[in-house]
Image 1 (spheres, rainbow, N blue to C red):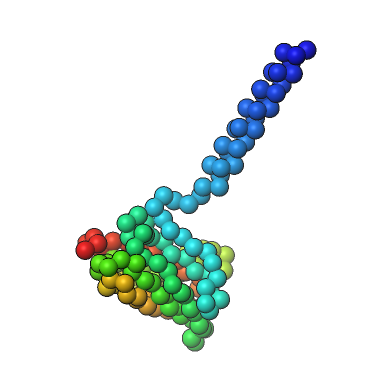
Image 2: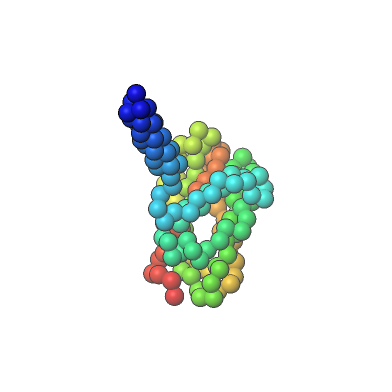
Length: 147
């Protein structure tokens, strides 16, 4: 009988350990080296920022994001800050999404160059391509590297 109890306790411990591994693995849905936020910023806008470079991610902070409706189009302004003393060069792209989180294609969308001097801020602005746009993700990537 003691062997049965010991076996049962060992089996329970293994099941609990496997469940813990599955739970913790499932909670990690964020891509490596990507900073994303889903918080309400000033202006009541659900904003997202995606920086797919660990060095750039470490040096840029999202300060604020505001929005307004202009002729039924969502217009956004995102304020970024350089946390270093060096000038940062990067490229950025706004991607727009509808209320169901489907991407709204914009044929005029392209990567634009950006630069923030050391310890300075930068305001990036864009307007949605059509009235179905509900939210966005701002993508940042290094251009020629960090000076």
